[in-house]
Amino acid sequence: MHDFIIDRGCIENVGPDPIPDKPDKPTSKTKKIMQKAKNGNYRSCNALALLYLTGKGGFNQSRPNALIWFEAGAKLGSLTSMYNTAYTALDVEDLVNAKYWFQKCIDTKWKDVAGKLTKDAYQSLCTKAKEQMEYVDFTLNEGKYAPVKSETKACGHCSKEQTESFVS
Image (cartoon, rainbow, N blue to C red; front, side, top):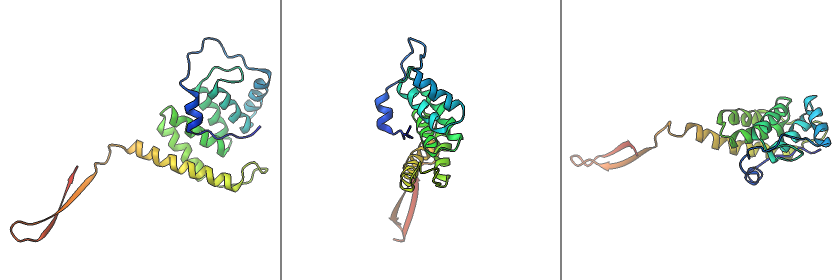
């Protein structure tokens, strides 16, 4: 089982959550993953969330359930799950939760947990998280600050230069 990092292409290919027309019927393999996730295996939490996100393994597609399991893995300390939690929260427009988990991802120091995440992969993940964090910060603060435009003009009386600032 490999950790999988979601990105925009992954989410765009998923489409909107359909209205389930049948109950979830997890496969035997999915049931094993569920059991491991319930026992605190962060990789299984991430895998289970991906099954919900894509509607595979006998599950109906569900972003809310995916978010629950990504967050469960994130709380267990999985950097990949932290990023995936933030990205899924961003996709469902929960910007505050997205900001929290992107920041947590950025603040988490790299450690080689049994060779599962290389230092390069860690740095790449943090770079992606920082880029997404800029978007989240901009979106959360949009409209709070008006852009200021300034113009320098010569005074009509004394020819001295003056700077005038105004909100554009």
